[in-house]
Image (cartoon, rainbow, N blue to C red; front, top):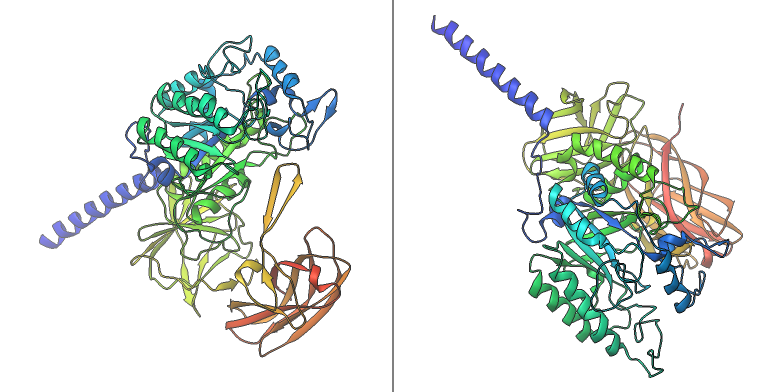
Length: 588
């Protein structure tokens, strides 16, 4: 009788545990309910990890077309001489035509909420000097200079509070192209008298920042930009105003003179290695920040998620921009991608919010990893067709491996060999954008972050993770179109006998195709070698754009760690910029 009761009790406990487990799986572990009204200072930034940026202003009315000519590049810089070079008086006349009646603050706040974002930052004043709010400090503003006469910032601030989002302002504190004394602005005032930066700062900049900090309720963040040439004393005054009136607000890293609260990376830059401290990456849903009529190069939901998770897995926050048009409407294709990505986040909040960076310090061939305590969340973007997912270097024991599938979990088989863990997968991924595998560990994750050469997918290893001799890793940053930045960290400045070396971990021995991604001039001869083993070399064309070329097969005779070196041997080696090495197993 006692045994029967014990068996019955055990069955009830197991049933209860299974029921609790299924509900946990349905809700997601540690679902974060960060709301602006109860968040601590910086919490939405540091734990929310995802925000909306909005670039919207007079420039949106032009959409990059002036006098019938299209200018390709970022729309908010249309006044610049490198773009349309619009004179100040002519630009100011645009305000008479600016009547954005399609602007819907509640719809934008709902879009951000649906997208999974935790706060919104919008351009209160960009470099053109036009205030997108009711400013008493300068009449070049949306309520006095336009027929619309609405303060959209009040509406958006209220809409964000209503749905529980944080709210903040972008403010160009140094550049002002239309106010006398502002950087790159008129050098004389309306009376023809010389104007200084101090004139601009005291008459317009400082009063406007105070307006933003006192008239729109709680502010999550003040996002200053382009401080070049601005003296520290001016930046300090602005920071003091923010601290006095909005003690909960963060100040962006682009305030200048190290007076911001966190680091802002370069525009459109998603780092490849983990970055210490609090930082953000700012990106946009297409190519331009402000609306550009021709720009239909939208990021897909999968690409948005990939870049978001890459930032979170590197330890940072991702702020993604939309650019409403001159009528105030958000382009529909941007909203579609944001909502589709947001639906995925709604199902897997534990992957994105209040997580720690990947202990590997870099992406893995199939996706990326975020961490919460003793749990790893593997976001698998490239589902292996082999039915096996290979995880290199995990030293901590695994209690369970759970594949999330439509609110349920399926336990995966796994086995360890030579420092790798291999999971058995179903033939098809349960998610169209990215599938999630949750690993519950025996303790906090400990890993060997050596790059593993995936036997099925292959592995691309960026040059910035190599160790060069007689060559140098540099930051190679350029614009595809005006203001649309791309950034790589290649090995370059090659000298005779120079090489760069990666340490790799091979699970399955055999022949691997070595390919190099590089740029340069003319024909270049490259060498690839396994140190202490096989050497190969080949000549390929080069171009000013990075392209990938096969070099040849190299052999790894057994599992284990190897050092692989690449050298630029002949040609215009000084011009060669090596971006990455790819190793892919040769199929039988």
